[in-house]
Length: 584
Image (cartoon, rainbow, N blue to C red; front, side):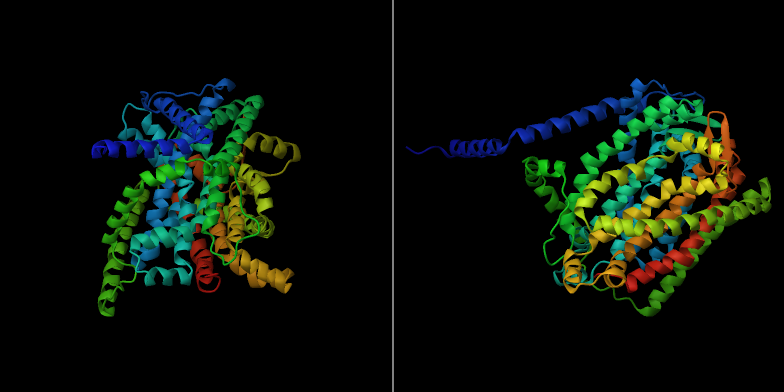
């Protein structure tokens, strides 16, 4: 007796479903419960972002330590929202700059300028804009805080990914063209995997930069107005202002738990996962490991989601064909290209010139152009601190970073420690710094270098580790077999291998040091305030009092110093890394 086809089809479907369900285990149940709990916490805590708010309203933070778990989740939501925005910005900006010769001449200098603008400079505009965009809702301040954190993360990630794109190994480029990949497939299959390791490490470093400015982002003080959003940063700011060391200690403990937890649950698995994108001819003896990643690999959810998303992936690949093939040469007559360059340059100069003239006219009307004299002189003092910091940090942290990057065992041990140190907001240590400076009589003009280093030196260490990890293990094993040690090993292998990453670390550390000067040249605890001579202190004071001409002059001068340093030093080193020091 034959079985009707519809019944047979349903039986077959039921058997397949039963077979798939049989593959699931207690590991899948734990993963599912973890995701559901995370979604519930996000929805529950996220409700607090849409409560009513008025710009004239005074928002205070409850400094009861029992509120710290709630504040920790609010801060984490802001940090990961900013990280997501930074990742999207990085992909679009870096890809456009790397693949458009004309736009590169505008986008990379613009990135230099954006990196040089301090967080307080962005907050001045962001608070007014977002509060007006979401009238009567706290969501405006939330967006302003997320935007401020975004500005402390995005530039470093963009520089790192841009450099990965322009230094794609030659064999990978030839593979893409010979396989006739679309431009989308080249990005997804070649360029993104090639830049995955430095991108992840710089994203981790940028996340630490976001922690550094968490106090300024959550305890907002601009234009003679003070706003405090619920979060660990604003809690620490309130405790520091009140001079309550016990509550500062609770904030420090909470921050340490958050950093270790994020590292264990998110960054450590991600670092171990991107190891598969390392290009090498032999399998590494030691590999990065993560307990969380190993646990997830025993789960059926990744494979189940992969099968479910296959149609969407195929749809995206078909849509990517509209961008054309990678091997399609752009044949343009040289005269037309030269004419296009001239038109583009004229248009860009007209727009920039129009903006500069309007800005100068505003300053001339309000204070006169002499307002630039003081920040120009103060900038020299901050420049000296930046140069000392970057030089000393390079000499100290590059050898340590190489040692860590070459040893997965050391990486497993050192990464959480480095992440804690890099992520720890220097503002939390200001009470101890103030006490130390007062007891020793050390001037903040010298001590400010130490405080700036807390927020900037880690860029060099992280990029050194990432550069060392990206060196193929077969090259290191060849050096070991040949018995090459000491300076010759550094000259032939290590320096060429890590040089591009070190340049990225140097340029971002330099920009980070300028940005950190805003909070490092003025130290306040309780009723005691120490001030250093420098451009950072000038901008911080102007922002707090709402002096727009001084804010504009200070930010413009800081941008001038940073862009000038990038043009004269870092950009030349970038070109050297691209032309000489490439493992591809």
